[in-house]
Image (cartoon, rainbow, N blue to C red; front, side):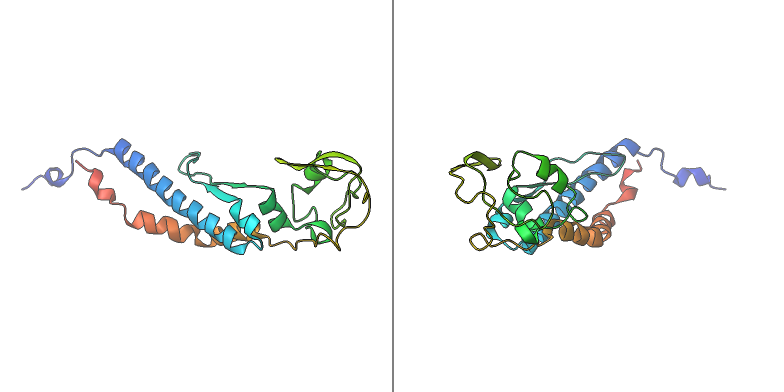
Length: 187
């Protein structure tokens, strides 16, 4: 009678399999980051907003077998996503609004509430957002300027991009896993 143990593999290279699964996860993550960036850009209302969206394709923090995707945006992308002036999303839709209102970038002449209209600033040298500084004479201090600077309606591109990624997450991951040969690690 034949020994049934003769047909069994002698050794499983588990470490190599885990390394390859992590690499596969990173590749799937990169695909997801590209998908997320594309989704957010496609939902932006302004070209300046589209230009300031970048999914971080290099930084993946491994937590067990999971990872994170970082999305970098600039001020124009944030204004596109959350709106400006009287059309700006409120605190329930924009978790960073309260912090922004307390920052040096918030116009001190503007009411500290969502939907406050765009107003002129007092005389002085002002940082509107990082890298954008202007000196104003204060002629329009506290004056509603939405007749001159039309407020931008919120596109919610960032939030909707994440929703779309969540919808296709399993499909992308399953596609990558279906290509993985688990049997190849028996020696």
